[in-house]
Length: 147
Image 1 (cartoon, rainbow, N blue to C red):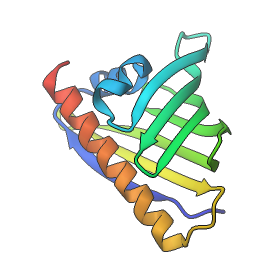
Image 2 (image 1 turned 180 degrees about the vertical axis):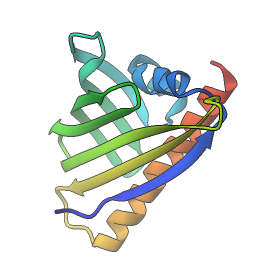
Image 3 (image 1 turned 90 degrees about the vertical axis):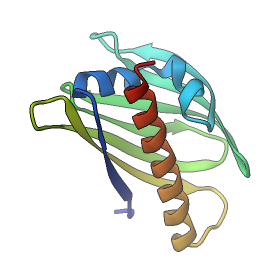
């Protein structure tokens, strides 16, 4: 099994508020930085995105890829790569855990990336860590700003 990278952050908001921002793909370009376009292609019976096309521009890495999403209850979402120009795999998840009285949430982001071009494992893990840290910081700022 491929190695993955994970990190956690505490957000001063209820899990439902955090998941609301995570699930609002149309607004990803406003807070993620690297995602320039996001389009929900399919939704599940509950109305949550099940397939999403993302246009990514992270400097050296530019990619148009599609991810399939699986929602587990109200506190976890995971995804796998359906198609991509540059990536061989992109698997990840957000896991939300309420803290205290429920007005704080620990968010754990896990990510495994495999690119089609050769790359040392150490460099790949560092890239994953940068992606995760930027995503968690952006998510925290977005949720706590109430936008």
